[in-house]
View 1 (cartoon, rainbow, N blue to C red):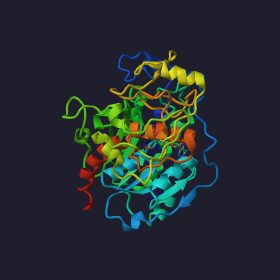
View 2 (view 1 turned 135 degrees about the vertical axis):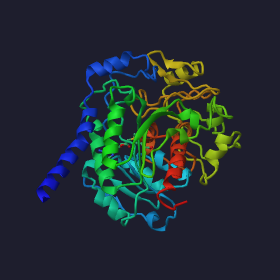
View 3 (view 1 turned 45 degrees about the vertical axis):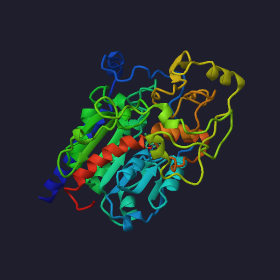
View 4 (view 1 turned 60 degrees about the vertical axis):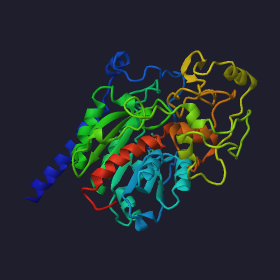
Length: 427
Ligand SMILES: C[S@@+](CC[C@H](N)C(=O)[O-])C[C@H]1O[C@@H](n2cnc3c(N)ncnc32)[C@H](O)[C@@H]1O
């Protein structure tokens, strides 16, 4: 009897992973179908074909480094664990919605430095997810139940910005790792975030929904969410998967706050960064020097620290300064790279990216002839000013380009909170 039971368990286990493996078997025909598809969401995300897929010497190769926090013991709020947390855009959004972030895990040293700085009471793991075990998380949290298990699984393999997308990109296989944690930790809900490219390529998203549902026992569904609809001044579309234990999750419960169907217009660049002081080439400023003039700016400055952080202009050669200065706001600065525009005060930003930025800035400031400071990149992602990005300018660009906009995550989190009421009495 025992052996039959064991055999059934092994069979079920294998079946669980079969569909997710098929997810990864996208071929060139599917990709080219996608390239020619009229349903393609983002048509202007052309990037430099010569730029290598991002590899980082900042990745931690050793055994996972564990840091034990305290928040899980004192918190009265629902608890979030974020795998592949980066600088913690999703975590910040969940905090805004009334959750506590119990733990973040990432392989990138500067990202964990940022995460620990901004979540000093949370646990953190620096390490390759393949070497991290669910038991490590269970121990760090003293066995506390995880309410929301989040994964911003790396997206380069699917990204429209990655001109070298391929089926055997190792990063695509990190989904399999996430399933281990879902299976063991049995969270009350799961959230997975990825780039929009996945939705329109092959049957990736359906297969991922199926495999996540199978492993978690929840019905997992997904939807493309457009960041400006949630008050983010950036044309960024993310594919979000959600599963909740209490009852089937409906994306209709995620409330749009801005745009045509609401009473508020999209947040413009001026409303987002207009209060940040002007900078000359290479200059850094620590004082605001003016008052907040928009609702968005007031929100960003609400919990600010003693001084303005991360507001330094990139240092450009003369040719770059005149190139930016001579570009009409709203237009591309480099004819070959349509997404590298000089921002206009009354528009939205294109999607901020993390890599492939040559020279080392992506977007021009609307009135200063320079690239953006990290603080301006943070604002365009809707990171409030009390969030400090660590690790130097280049690594801060990587982290801010990879992040989920906190206000988008907040909207998802608020909807999930309603569902969690049904499985626990947490507020
Ligand atoms: C899309 S970003 C996540 C962004 C994050 N959710 C946020 O909102 O800020 C993906 C992250 O996965 C991390 N990562 C990549 N490979 C990893 C691995 N093998 N183990 C752990 N983390 C990894 C990267 O360093 C990166 O920070």
